Amino acid sequence: MGWYISHGGTRHGYSYSDVDELVHRCSGILTRGDQCTITSVMRPGSGDSFEVKPRQARKVGEALLLAASYLPSEWAAMARQIGESALRAASANEQWRWS
Image (cartoon, rainbow, N blue to C red; front, top):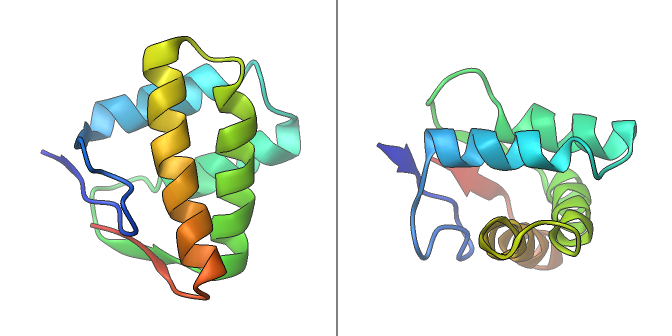
C-alpha cells in the first residue's frame, strides 16, 4: 500500500514507509520550522485520506525543493516530485489531496 498524491505527486508511486523515510532524511537539512511543516502533512498518523490547503501546500513544496538540493539522488527525485505537486496545487489554488 502507498499514497496517491494529487497533482502528479505519485507518478512513480510511494509507499507509506518511503514517505516516512523522506521526512526523516529531511530532518538534518531543513530548519525546525520547515521540518515541522512537512512532518505535519507527510506524517499524518494514519493512512486515511486527507487534504492540504493551498497555502500550506506551498510551504511544504518549497521546503521539499530546498531539501532536494542536499539529498542523495533517489531521495532528491522523490522530494522534487512531491514538492512540485504541492506547488502545482497551490498555484491552482486547489486542495492538495493525499489518499
